[in-house]
Length: 257
Image 1 (cartoon, rainbow, N blue to C red):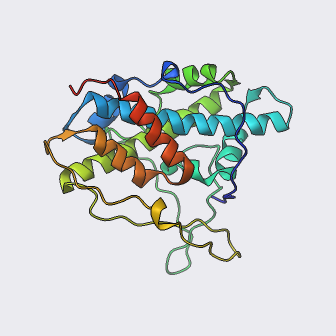
Image 2 (image 1 turned 60 degrees about the vertical axis):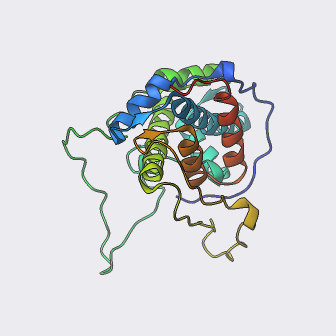
């Protein structure tokens, strides 16, 4: 999907304090149960919920700006495409792109080694839980987030935010589980976004690349620090730092149970 890695101006959006916390730890744990049988501590669930809220709030903020440019007050599916295209930092939950009618066709045509077009895989009838199967479970939380930001949206846009949240949280959970199993972040790579036909931008500054993380403690429990380490793998730039800061704040007074 074509993106324009430009940084939008921050708007005067409503505050995103802890009181506007729409995603509950219990809901987050249901997503983790689709990924792992490991125990997920309450601080870990709170941290993951905070990270999802931070990212979705930033996407919604971009949607609001796109709607305002067309003098609209209600958000449409096209607004979420505009939001993500304008701010590459919030490109998350990418598996949803091939599933949602809003995003289909935006990723271009893929060819195999013989030059034959690769068709999107047909959806199976498997009952195995996945981010797609559970993509509807965040609808109430997405609506709550939209209300906290003072906007309304058509059902299709709610569905897209719902799907992005589910897929992003599933990816975050999988990275956190990998970190627990491997005893930390043993490998880390970076991807530098670039536009077709344009020179590759310089790599990120050394200090912007997260340090490798070595964990200690229970190897059967996903903890808060595992979520924070997974966040550094899933996000980059300002949104990563913002997500980490807000996750720290959200879990400051949370019990370790």
